Amino acid sequence: MADFQASVIDGMGSTPKRLACKFFYDDVGLELFGKICETEEYYVTRTETALLRDIGPDLARLAGSECTVIELGAGSDLKIRLLLDALDRPAQYVPIDISHGPLQDGARAVARDYPALRVGAVCADFTAPMLLPDDAVTITRGGRLGFFPGSTIGNFSPDEAQAFLRGLHPLLGTGGALLIGVDLKKDPDRLDAAYNDADGYTAAFNLNILKRAAQELDVDIDPDQFEHYAFYNQAESRIEMHLRSLQQQSLRVGDRTFDLAQGELIHTESSYKYSLDGFTGVAEAAGYTALRHWTDAEKLFSIHYLTVAA
Image (cartoon, rainbow, N blue to C red; front, side):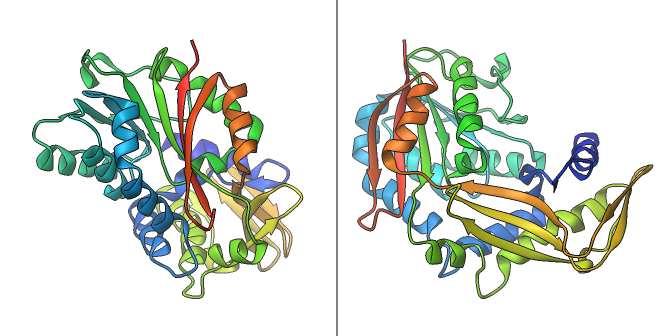
């Protein structure tokens, strides 16, 4: 909770104002994101899951037997189950996430349904370089396979993505691998529609971070005085999500007060889109060898298999 409040204070004191997207995912945020994934406009989840089903035999060959799967972020467990089912006798599953409740619930469900799999959840911010605690993992004959689905890598700028990927080296180890989902550049109208669905779930998801702050923190804020605003910034190859103030207002966070003008934006998320060569360049600059990638027939989305360079 202290991290959330400190992040809000830091972000509201910045120019432009911002809120960290990692705090989207409380219970309400996870439920809303699940609804977003089911909308006609949001192609990412259904495209990635279809790809995972298709490339299972390739993944089994690349990862080898008895590997340790480390998932960065723990949302819906559909994708991790597709991966575990595809692999050859995976030995361990270690999800890492900042949200304790969903993390534990997901880990227990996987442990129940995969009794031969050792499961050890780690509640932590996976965006910071880290090593796994000794009680979360054991030595096995297989290697380590990081799993970072959903194009979450797009929430980082390319320079930040490179730094983040390099920071995973100690976690994965020399020769370790990373399976990562990456959204691709496409028609801007399709991207705009994906982040402005007709049912309003993305808008509710974006506004929920304000509702969470009002409920969980010492924050005087009225979420009804903001609206969702998302668009594709073609020059930067990214979707930008903002909260737009509907009137001039002041927000109190703890003992701090922040003024907003009518129409002022609070930046909540960026989602960068890549070409295949563009992402391969980022990965190689971060010390990985790009062994393989897969795309759907429409080239909407890609999955990459990277290994930590020796």
